[in-house]
Image 1 (tube, rainbow, N blue to C red):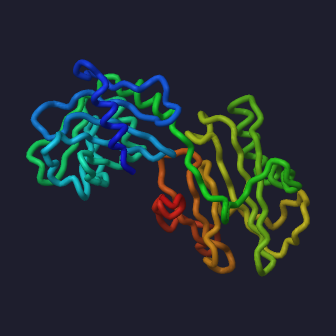
Image 2: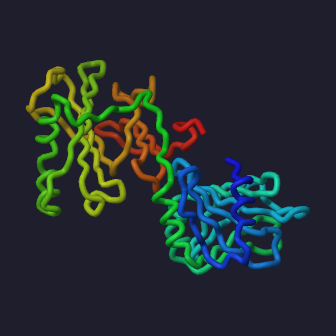
Image 3: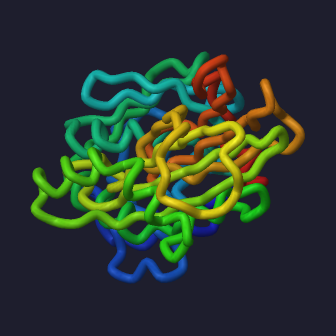
Length: 297
């Protein structure tokens, strides 16, 4: 990503020194916050924090004729004492840092943001005054991730398998009702596999207070030799997968003991996409998946 024109416009607009984080009222075309002036003594003159499709980038403006040493590679971003190693890319007059979602809360709550590049003689420091309000505004306005539909396990609320889903997750539904005094929303998806195998996903969505930031929980159930017609018979079904709200994808051509590998992409940012694979009796996390593999970025 390259935010040079947007960065140049943002840091030259204020007539006086920028002392606090601000976000423009109109973020129809771009979601960003303007950072205050950095402490003097470095090649950096200003910066913006941009969010696009839930990808966060901190873009720094480098003074004309100066060079930010170590801009290509990695940098350390520290807020509220918490360090984050981030990817750094140097452009023409700008340096872009990929900011992990987990860094946003320390940036909202901290007093000063430190950015260190290997080889640069002193860290770049930005005040975090007003950062909570500005970053939250960008978070609310940021565009949603565009995910592929190919190989997606498509959950449906109007499926004939819905009653089976209610029965398999009866205890979870009861606990949700007791805790929230409300009924959750259910969606389900049935997969018929070779060898008379069936893989059945049941998603419950309701309160983010109860189910975390996504407001959803999804469980997977497996059965062998059960037939393929909808019914509410829970016999033979075993729970083999569970996660906070995610989009579930199958990995084409990748099976273990007849069960497909799965990729779980969080409904909300904050954790990595994960590869799940059959581990004898149920699915287990095998590792993380780089976002580029699913978004094509």
